[in-house]
Image: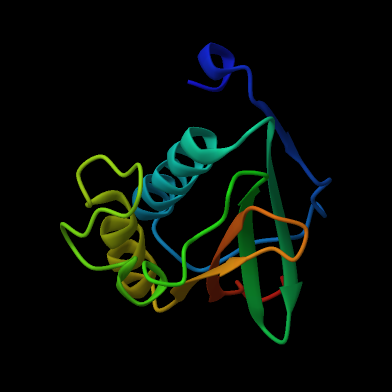
Length: 128
């Protein structure tokens, strides 16, 4: 999808010790939905980063698109709610359900420089 649209996807370098408690399939489903949405709305780029703090790991997916309208913001994660340019209204609801099933959550915001950022926060795995 990114190649078809001419969108560059990049990631921040990740520390080797970064690990979460969760379900691989649920995390994959949630991230796939976030990435697909970010690519759909991006003008030129999507950026993914993960960081650990206070026993939690946050994974953020951001784009340089138009951002989220204030009217859409309160209903973004509702099943079957389609914002401007949305397809089926299921992707973000699925991502939130997956994050919550793993004991985490998801949040959305507009970036100050433009575009949107979605962040999944999950419990970090204990250090060995």
